[in-house]
Image (tube, rainbow, N blue to C red; front, side, top):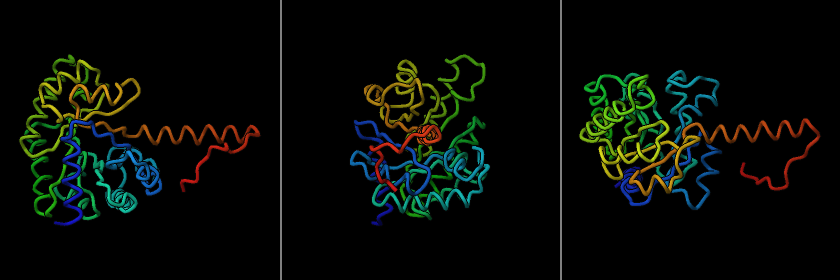
Length: 259
């Protein structure tokens, strides 16, 4: 059994555990090291939006895949023994091959989004990802993302929830580990998603206005991540201290040497 296989199985166990898996998204090697150094950290997740922004690209597969994967590989190295789940957008046109390349840099799980493509096409993408993991000897932990809530347009919320549940069940049947439903998921929506998709099978994002991780845990949610929010917090702190320095301020004594 390889170390990478061990990490993949660890990530799957963390998804299935009674405690919600809290993953703090990172975007480069130094942010990965800073988060990995915390004793509470059980796994690392990359933020595709944040990595793209680091290189000056907009989100949505504008950054070249090779550039993205190079940074993801650096994050894997910085994370040490921790499993790393990568944000791979929609799979860059070939989800199976993209995951194969991600496994090549040490990744053991990923988010891959459906962008509300036809269900049969989305299920085929999930199946291709799982097959790629099997071919590489890695039990890949796919956090299959459905955009049913955030791309639902003006359709009723009930219709979007029903779509998320239908897609989520199909993705689990195709081999996904958990189902990521981004958007502002309140307690009622979370409860309905868990009832429809399964206990410890739903993954959410911690946006402003979302519930606390412990609240989602009580509702049966498996995982919470924070996407580009963590980089925004870091950049807000940078911009604020820069403004203070321009105003004759000084570097705070509480600053830690994390780089």
